[in-house]
Figure 1: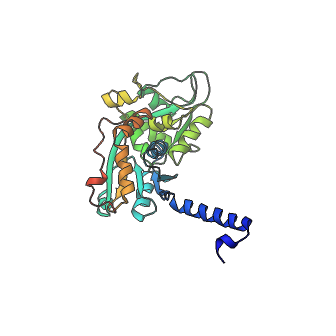
Figure 2: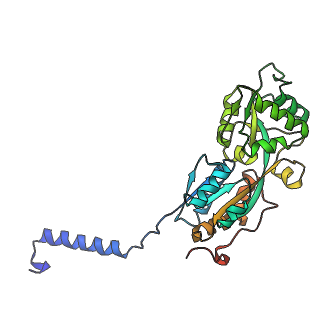
Length: 294
């Protein structure tokens, strides 16, 4: 029985169904979303989210999943085991990591800072920093107790703070040995504790504070503001390098995203979110990276 001999209502329904099927087949197939997993230092996680949002405007199929609470070494380990495709770290690669095929791109530096959410604390001197950590100064000028937020001895923030001066190094060792001290395991935990504890003071980074729009503020030290410009000029001396890491044979989508981070558009975003890019390396380009997967 031909279509024309069917009842008119049934024939109309069949024609409509056939038309819709043909129309649907004629539509372009949407690109399959590429989900890349990234983890590492908390100083840069929100910045990576902002960069990914900008990159997706030119590469809509790209998707970035942030794995929290790994830290630099944990992020690199996750990369080497294949749990993630990109790591972000505040240190470069070790010999054994390079032997495992891990490649690093230093994309910038951010100010390593002392931060507080206390309104009437506007600046510190190195002498004050040493007194605060040594316990020689236990209260702020208004009488409120100082609540220090420490990081584990193995965390990069601890030796960075110790490098401020010999007196700060000695004072930090005293604080680390004191019982009952607050210790934050991650960068985000540290910022949360600084903001939560009345009179809180601890280490953080300008990139984290700016990209996450934190209430805690980075404090000038010896009269020098921890700004991107002062990091670039060398006036502010306490800095944390930032690296993106990937493995040989990484998907081309990974290499293209890292290349975007090093592009003019990416560098503008980095600068706006607290990272100095004046000493950044040259980002790998997908076209010239022979190891990138096809």
